[in-house]
Amino acid sequence: MQVSQMAGILSEVNYAFLVTNLAIDAIFYLLQNLSQEHVQCLAAICWSLWKHGNLKLWKNESEL
Image 1 (cartoon, rainbow, N blue to C red):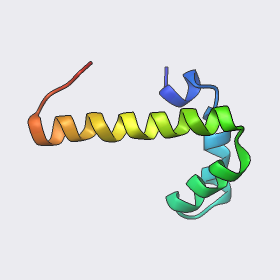
Image 2: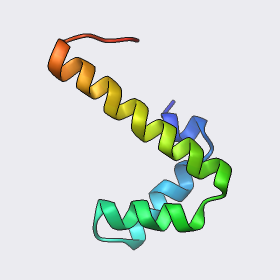
Image 3: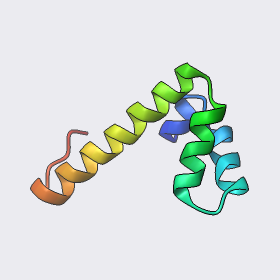
Image 4: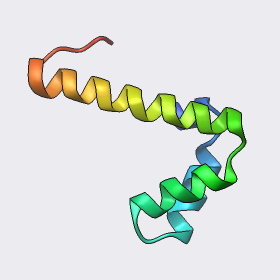
């Protein structure tokens, strides 16, 4: 199961990427159209993906 699906925002994320041309535009669309709770979930998901990606890239470690 995808993280965004578990957070309840998968359909909104998919729609944002359908109606925009760039990832940054999709992010701003989501920030403007999601509830505050879902924006917080999106921020936590992005941070977690960034953190775990850096751990794998720079230290070849995984917290999973």
